[in-house]
Length: 96
Image (cartoon, rainbow, N blue to C red):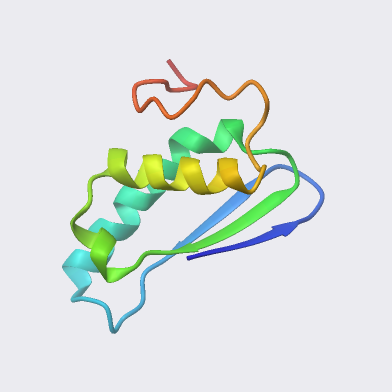
């Protein structure tokens, strides 16, 4: 689930996993996976976008590359990715 708002400044992302979804170990892993997916997407998100993402129970077993692909598709549909975004390629990393 994504909550998106437009503000001034650089794009910001918040990640959450509800307590009722799973035990702490699985929630921590879910947050870590989601943060990694967003870390790779953050350079391509338009300026002034604030995102709060909540991970669902079905996604707890997914890998970061799968979460990345889902987040990228969702952001692309909403028009929140910059025009120079290279596409949903997991190996494309802005740092390298």
